[in-house]
Amino acid sequence: MPDVEYVFLADAAEVQAGSKFHVLGGGVNRIAGPAFPFVHPHLSIVVGLRVTSVERNKEHELGFIVTSPDGAEVANATGRVVSRGPSDASDIIVTIAIDLWNMTLKVAGEYAVRITVDGSERKRLPLVVTGTREMTPPTEPQRYLA
Image (tube, rainbow, N blue to C red; front, side, top):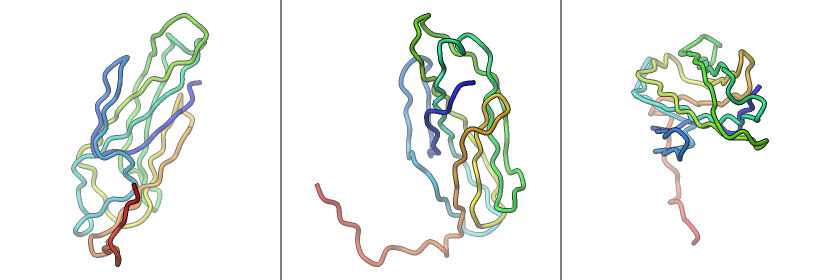
């Protein structure tokens, strides 16, 4: 079974087959809305699957499930992935971007984004959802050292 090499949330992502991927606002782990429930317009899940030479040219199922703090499903989907690559023994990484459009978030708390491969959960990401009143600005300005 392919392993999840990396997974993260982003504001937007685009993958070019067999090439690079492009990310806008990568590393999302917290979002806020004005009042509950609210609809978050867009979020991308970026998944990098490590596929061995034995797993190449075979169909694998990739899925995700977003759950609310009480465990209820907010969004989910599965799809089939077939990786193609050279016949040598090296592993390849297949990057996939999944778009989540207009996701309704009903309550504040820690949501979970669970990634499955061939029906087995392989990674879990936390996503903290708050109201805008709960987001407080820092008391001191951030300073960066170069």
